[in-house]
Figure (cartoon, rainbow, N blue to C red):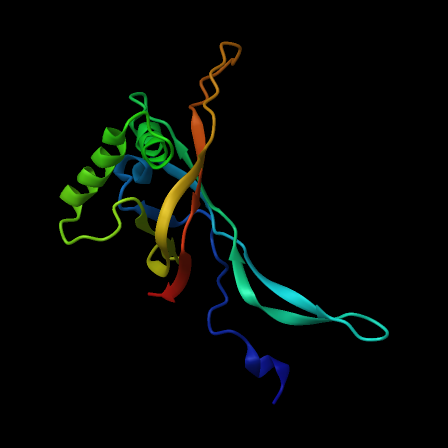
Length: 177
């Protein structure tokens, strides 16, 4: 069997311009997402000592890096505030009521139950015909970092404010749609 007979069925390249991102708890952020970084996956290794060299052997623990999105901030700052309030409620709120309000808000959205403090999310990647092709499902997503907002009078043209948010999560899986 020659190498030519082992060519892929689809020769189109993956486009970085065709995607949709959705987090259940962030309707405003979902609308303004501009960029997404699919996390890196790292399988550690174990060095087995020998009298001469250490031999690397694949590990048994997978590390996922943080998931990052870039989004534009609307002039009412609703997209920014969704994440800011979520982080604030998860962190050290000023009072117990903030944490309780987050849980109550989620109970109203999801009366079936579940963990009110995290959310599931999905990155839908489209093919060259702009049809959904691959779905990356994130489980147990919560924001860990929200970048600063830069205001500057010196700009010669309006460059709308963008923000970066990083998320931690339990795991993600990839499925072909």
